[in-house]
Length: 238
Image 1 (cartoon, rainbow, N blue to C red):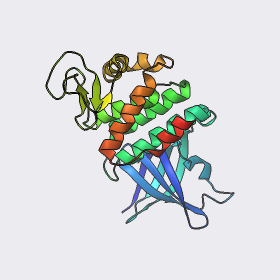
Image 2: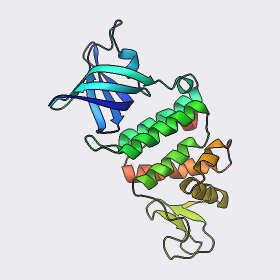
Image 3: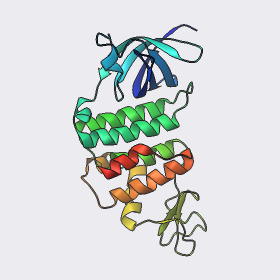
Image 4: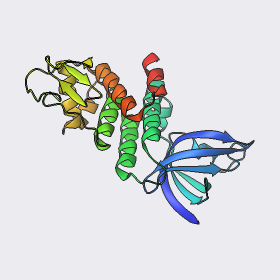
């Protein structure tokens, strides 16, 4: 056990005692880190505001047996435009919840860390309506669950593709159809997201196929995580 430095994004916090918090972060070199920030709920706390969810911070921590202890925290980016816009904040909350569910303690996943940072920076620069579904599908692919989109996952037919099944992991033809209907527009958009056209997709405004892709992406993530995503439901009701 000893001191270490890391950079991370705060995913969530919970109260501990009268003045402390347990801070959960995703870091580049250590995966998920859970650490105690002592005294941060006091008015004169040195770094309480720097350790709010959505903050990108540089940390000095002391490694403990079950929980580490944060001894220093320096703000890198608070993503202020996201915090000041309820719709953007709702999208960011979805991203944090999903990453919290996927990343493991002590298992570095630099690609996931960079994916989250890139998504938050994109959201801070522009309220990209397709960011959440795009992130969900890219995350599934990054975690080894890239869906089959070019042919029927059941029989291999390359003809019409009309349904998507999360258990099968791809699209289905009319003969093998089960699961959820997928429109041609949604399928085309999903191919663009998982292909080389992500930047152009995120630059576009709201598209009719966007909600359909978000619904399918949410169901696919929930299937693999074996849990419901609460923040997505809140975003849908907003």
